[in-house]
Amino acid sequence: MFVASVEKAFRVLDVFKATKSELGLSEVAAKSGIGKSAAQRFLYTLQTLGYLTQNPASKTFRLSSKLFELSASYVPENLLREKAEPVLEEANRRCEETLNLTILDGTDVTYILRFPSKHVVSVNLTVGTRLPAFCTAPGRILLAHAEAGTVEAALDKSQLVRRTEHTEIDPAKLREILKQVRRQGYSFCNQEAFLGDISIAAPVVNSSGDVVAAVNVAVPYPRWSIAKAQRQLVPVIKDVAEGVSAALRS
Image 1 (tube, rainbow, N blue to C red):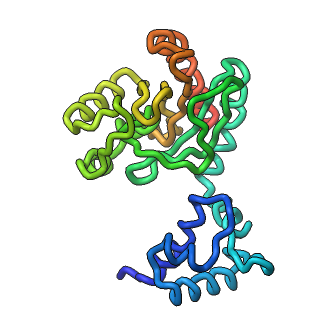
Image 2 (image 1 turned 120 degrees about the vertical axis):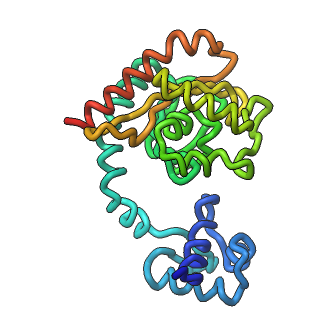
């Protein structure tokens, strides 16, 4: 049932996610692992369909706005962003720290809404960024409420790569952490995804009682100590999560 040519077409599109510049045929072939002749055919087809545009001078390619139109048709995510945006914006204005909205995508979290800090930060992510769920505060919130199969996939040893010296990669310890996260209603990560980044997250719950997203606040160490972050920011992020949840239910 698997159509290999469709997989290759998406592989070609995927190489453009990691760059802000235009790419030529040779670069696309090298980055996608597809032969140059086949890559040329995929580029031509995607351009003809309107998903890529070509610079007539340099002959390089870039993603077209048609992909944004396609993503805009994903109603659940759009509704979530629409409901969450004013809540996160107001909280960001009050606390002046970075606030994010994320969803679970396989074994990763994807950032779908972001309000950066008014201060200098240690990590500057963008909307669309994907990170491993097991070592991020929002990822742990989402895994704590996910189906068993999703949790096992995320905690498979092949997925557990140490990103910093603080990253917990022991599956047994991570399972205990997820149990604790579910009990306490929030998660806390101290520099496990990025050095200098402290993150606290809480769940967003829809009208059916399902956890559909997570909100998190990220602050830099050592401007924030662990004790200060837990004391001052846990109530903030819980309040933000409840605000988004209430907006979804309205």
